[in-house]
Amino acid sequence: MASWLGSLRVRITVLATVAVAAALVVASVVLVWAVERTGVGQVRDAARGEVDRVAEALMAGEPLTRPDEATFGGSSVLVLVQDETGEVLDTVPSGGSGSRLHQIPGLQGLADVGTTSRGDVEHLSDEAHDRREDRVVDTRIHHAGGDLVVASRSVDGPDGTRTVVAVSPLAEVAQSVDAVIRALTISAPLLLLFVAATTWLAVDRSLRPVEQIRRQADAISHSTLSDRLPEPTSARELHQLTATLNEMLGRLEAGARRQQEFIADASHELRTPLAAMRAELEVALAHADTAEWQPVARRLLADQRRLEQLTTDLLTLARLEDAGIRLDAEPVDLAPIVAVELDALTTVELETDMRPVQVQGSAADLARLVRNLVDNAARYADRRIAVVLCDEAGHAVLRVDDDGPGVPEADRERVFERFTRLDGSRTRAGGGVGIGLALVRRVAEAHGGSVTIGDAPLGGARFEVRIPTG
Image 1 (cartoon, rainbow, N blue to C red):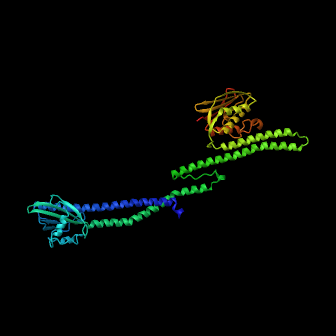
Image 2: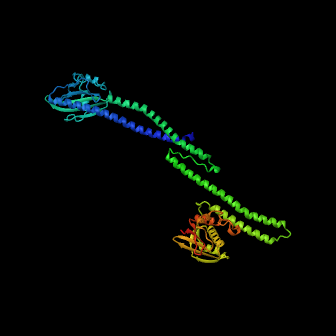
Image 3: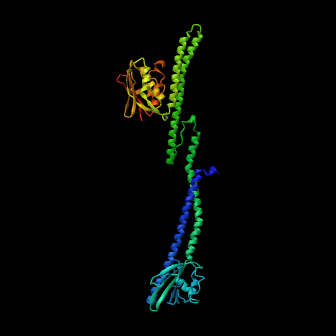
């Protein structure tokens, strides 16, 4: 039940039905009020009109004539003519008897006018205010036989002062209001049922593509990242959502592919020094009596150091592979780091121009960046390297120039890819394994910076690293 109530179909259907129900309640109240107000207004106009007509006839001395059972605005009107003492002199429709009160629906229960005490008639006329003024005044009276509208006007005629009182029941208005209420009582639930069914079907139709997307997404796994979600064209919002999700799947697929390639490349690179170490040991063991174990140990130690360095670089590269990685930032002075790495160079001539520059980042990763950059320059330089460290426009700039063969312009992006070696004839001992520059770029990007390759004034390649100082 909780799962069913938590369904989007149910919640939207209930919400739409409740909203329509609230609107129907308000609209029904307004409609009933408007029908009643309109009906009462018509009855008032009819009563006031009859009072004016009879009053004008009295002032002109004309006979009071009107068709029997006349109807104005859907309601019968009875007009009483009284003298100054309140005596009923005439009624319209004619007949002279107050019994015509009984012929008008809703007036049953009133005493016969003219046949009993005139107090009942005075009661009717007294309910209208300011009856002695020369204008029509009306009021609504709540009577046991039904609500009434009473209008009155006093006029001076040839026969003296006369008071015209018009009495009109509201029974037909009440019947009209009751009919509207009965119609609303029947139609409102049917309308709500129709709204609920329509909303349910519309939401169900709208959610069908979502269910298809959900099933397809549930079928996608690590081995099927090449699959994509269906992109419905019927709904722009769903199309945009699935397009975004497909782009995300594309990024995940690319990341998984890079990871697989990284593992394969790393395995291949690690296998070579391990195989060399194993061969060295097997040869030494095969000639155990004549083998010189100290040279063997030195060669194995060199291979072990190279293997250790390769493993460290691979782990660092794997950690930085995600471009969005956040490093533990701390103030780092680059000048001492660069100086330490340059002190280890003994095979080339060195020119330096270094100034204190401080950045926020990881000292260990920045030292690895400088070490790989300097080692790369020393590996391909003929005999000279120039290193510049300065602060330019809020960036720490490290330039490393060499006088070697340089990097062809077409290959200046490719050299930053993992395990890339431009000269296939180079041995791994002389040319490296091809992850140093990839590591340089990843460290620079992790610190919000960049690395580019250009032409050096010395004739070789210029590697320039820019890292924000803020």
